[in-house]
Length: 93
Image 1 (cartoon, rainbow, N blue to C red):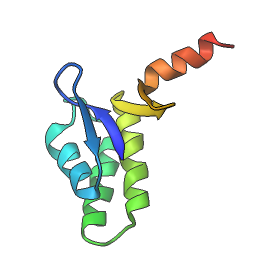
Image 2 (image 1 turned 90 degrees about the horizontal axis):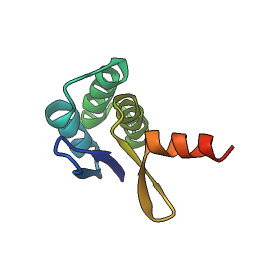
Image 3 (image 1 turned 60 degrees about the vertical axis):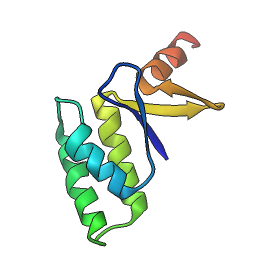
């Protein structure tokens, strides 16, 4: 399962399949898109056609979500935004 921020403030979306990821990429993605988003869309559609594994699709979706700043990483049973997590690590050095 991959957790990402939705369009509504504070909304978390759990993506549990390649189909869910494809729908999110095509319909729910934030307005700004980047290279990894476009690549993830292509990979997700190939995966749905049987052209790649779910693991490859998951990596592509996670990388695109990180690029967009909407990826949530679970740590010790709680969700932490990836950007916040990185800031916390730098503060602990």
